[in-house]
Image (cartoon, rainbow, N blue to C red):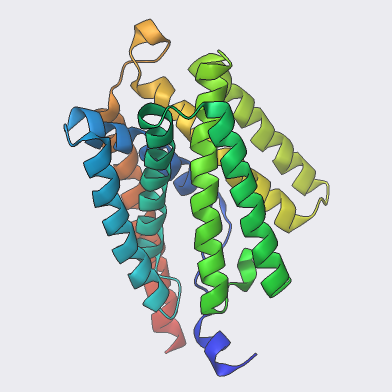
Length: 254
């Protein structure tokens, strides 16, 4: 491994239980946070999309400039990717009248192209080997596609297919559990990771809608404000713990 690659080690966190908890909550905040900013706060879809895209660009710039995994920068980027991914799908659906069937198909193709380009260039899709700037760019492009696809697929399941928020969340949770079982049975680790990563997005979207939507629409009526605030607090707590642990390991190695 050359010096450049060595300086880029550990840009992505280890896949632990905490990783998946933060990931699911980030996807839910992407759904509820986008709704809060666009509707409750009154910024509208256009202003929210532009503002969040600018913040995402700044966060990713900081992420790409770091030389090691920095939890607060990494997870801030994930939350912002989640919000932007949600806004992309919402604009296609609400503003451009693109059907959820079409947007789900479009993002599926874009995700497949992203995976194909990444694999052809790097010969691996493993997140344990994000050790060069190019690989990290492929990684974040793929992550954005998974969030946009997950939003469209989640809305497709709960709204267009009429499954409802509760059943939609339950189905995606069952698919994630089946992926975990497959991994436990020695299925390919890289494949099962990305399947689970993709599925957590529609699960989070369905969960967000279940928590925020009014009871008359099949939700629990918590509202986007309280749901976003609650989940953000948990994310901040878990990321703070991860950041403290990274700091301790850095101090030990010095």
